[in-house]
Image 1 (cartoon, rainbow, N blue to C red):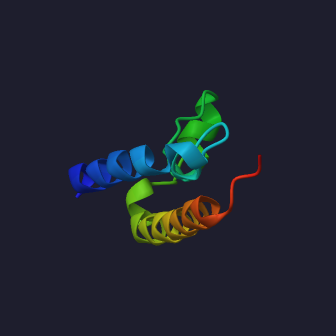
Image 2: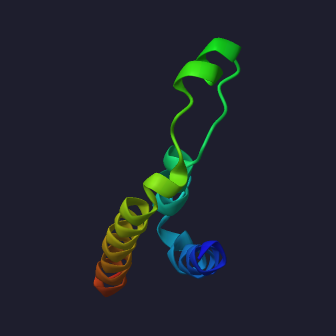
Length: 84
């Protein structure tokens, strides 16, 4: 599953790169949902309960929606007339 998602992101990222101003929306979503290890040992021990696998379906759905909006935006921009 991870390989499939990774390949999906790579293909879409290359398609959507002209649209990205700084970081692509796909990279932003993945960065927000990645697992992080708290540096503080107490926080790590007591509150480090987030696991990506618990949210993967939501993330995939969000990536699909973000991608659809990005592709539609690129399509609309391509249809706009060029100004001299």
